[in-house]
Length: 85
Image (cartoon, rainbow, N blue to C red; front, side):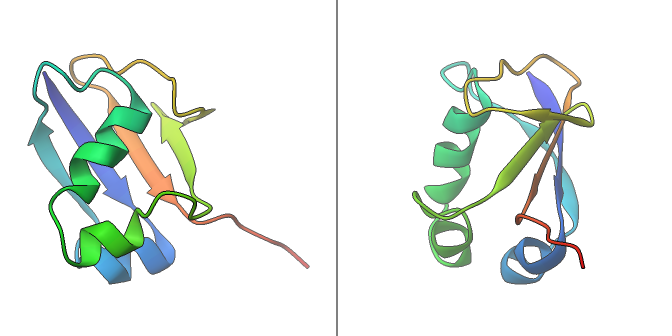
């Protein structure tokens, strides 16, 4: 399965990219599993996507939970919580 990844704000800075096209292994079926898969890259990826770190996820530009299913060609975005004022 091929997906598009996007990273925003401090996550983009931490991992050093605004996005990438990624071929996802068959065992990665949800947004949460993708986060685990990316974290396994090590280094900045482990820290930026650490378990327990507050992150928001959007799948195809819709807010989503970690259990959201991935589909071929989908866009998944990670970003920190946003506050306004």
